[in-house]
Image (cartoon, rainbow, N blue to C red; front, side, top):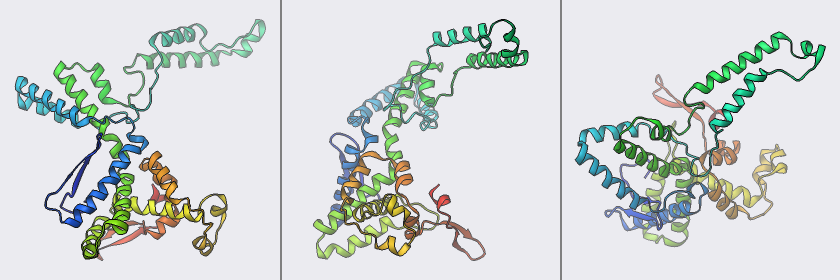
Length: 344
């Protein structure tokens, strides 16, 4: 759990999801963790950013381990391990959107044809007779020729355009041995598998915490477990100045979205209201909160979630200020309450 020296569970995004629970957990902890796991499993299965992940990744990783073991036996443990370390230092240099889209590049023949046209015309505009010197003055033609030369020079570069997926570029063009190519492919495949988890850390943990809190307080908690549950739950959501707790931010922002859509506290009419007292009392009794948070769970990642739903009112209510440490006073102090700075 966040901020503790103890891992209560591990959930694996497969089909079905597998979860490993710490055997020494108290019974109340096991119930809490199982409820938390259900939240993660639901998020894995229904969030758009996980739609293209390999649901049989456990089998795939076992296959990866077997191949790596064979390379170590053949080429030596230290050489293979050193190469894996170099690959892992680049594992974040991938195109995280690659599984969902197809990037199209101009074919070499098309670029060559464009270059020939540029050479032939040099930017000359169509004109006839005496008008040519006015339509195509020498300084204009010289500038066009310089641009064409710069474009030809750019196309001589390799690659022509910056590559977002560095690991894929190395896989296709780097002078590697076959076993090294395979390791690069393995590291890239696993990096793409874990990318959605990095993109949705706040939402994923917030969603799981929202549902473990709901399930425990409404259905699973017995009276004699209340104190232990409250202690462990509050420890998971604890925050400190200058530190972001994804569990806390995620669950509170989901609760805020549910509350706002239940009250109808959104849209042009609400945004146009400048009275804080009236905004606090605002209640159109729409009851759309639960529907809205399921929609949010389905569509957003962390960037979109925060950009769309983290409001000034929420930041002030949660005291999401910018802090700095005052060495003279030996304590953290609020450095900025500026909402735009906080949101960035």
